[in-house]
Length: 73
Image (tube, one colour):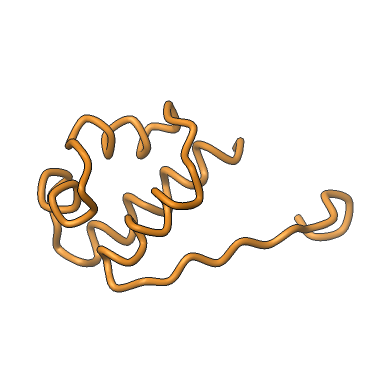
């Protein structure tokens, strides 16, 4: 799974756990519902700023990490 699809999966997972629709999350994050849909399907190149707003809108903090692909998967 590529990074955009993984990020989309994580956004969808936490959105559903928070009991939010795509539209509700979009309103909280200050973007369009179509943007949330694209993100969840891995079709959107996100900025850290936008991803931070989305995470905060779900009561989460964004954590970015670098891993060694040979040993950390």
